[in-house]
Image (cartoon, rainbow, N blue to C red):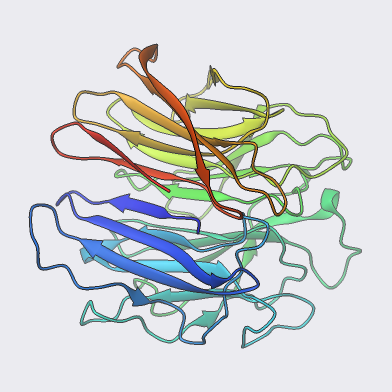
Length: 345
């Protein structure tokens, strides 16, 4: 369930997925070296069996690869997970150890916030900074979606230690059971995409950007969506030749845009209503693959759909749709060095 893929400069494919009981799942990781046959088999990330959560589709594990190829993983803890903070589920973190063959014991990063719901997210840069973000409340306020904030726990030593979480947003709220996605580009800028919940109905796809290595963030709404209910959405990032791309859901359709500039212009991906859970990939020709699901929902699988866009952002003739997305899952994608796209689901 819920594959995640990161491809590094050496063309290694880093894969992450969930397996087992959706209520008490395990997280698995595997690195596939490009052009070699000596990859090791999958290793379990979570040191406590059954401590991950797949139900809801947006609370599962997320993956980042930082300095010197160090792998970092975060996930929402299941009902079985420990250690368990007061008034919240844990947000668990583990990093690949020095051997590259196993993960260090999982750690909870929630120290001051409450009511973890939508999934946490992780990104890492080439300087050894690791950024873990999530949204939640605090014990001194009545927790509601319009009062939720996005928080950041920062490590400056490749995940060895983390400072306690601090808020990076205020006044936008956060859609309680929507997921988040963060990304650190090659210049060290940090991007985070979440769904706001101002007045509990203004649920814009919202971008937070830091250009000082996670110290401060500026917040910009990308696209409005007024609804009184949580759409349980997720998002995606990618660094393409023309900048950082983001993809998200609005009103049952998928949009993507370059978000490194001042005025993002969302591009609609042609799809039937009910599109969710985008993924992105770019190849050596500058083409962009957008992948998403259609018809998935609570306890319901659906179809896989995709569209390729050319360097100018125009849709090409390469698109498709087929069944096969399991319950609580979605797809991931990457490009091979020869330009071919691969979809994993």
